[in-house]
Image 1 (cartoon, one colour):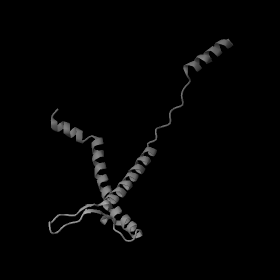
Image 2 (cartoon, helix red, strand yellow; image 1 turned 120 degrees about the vertical axis):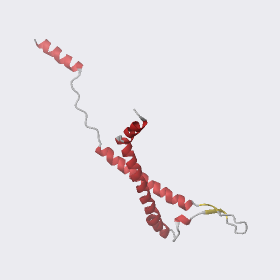
Image 3 (cartoon, one colour; image 1 turned 135 degrees about the vertical axis):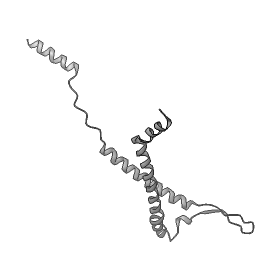
Image 4 (cartoon, helix red, strand yellow; image 1 turned 180 degrees about the vertical axis):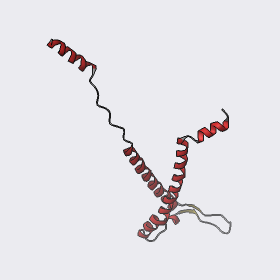
Length: 131
């Protein structure tokens, strides 16, 4: 079997194709959630917190110096808050999808257990005792 035919067989497996589709949809969903957080949730949260823009929130460790042309050194915790909220929304969405799939794929109820060997032997003993 040649490398190309092995690769073709590998690519055409259902699991690989499903994984590729999942990755593409996941990336698109991540962009949607990111935009939702940045463009909808954070402006509303900023409005209720006195008109502040979360993405602009930062802790300046060292200010920029134009004389020496050094850049500002800052911890941009506002971006971290945006990313954290995006992560929580995506995580919750994935949790709900997995929960729904698990509910749909409930295992079939187990068939009722048949009589045990001891039960059958007890019945045989009782029938022999009647004779």
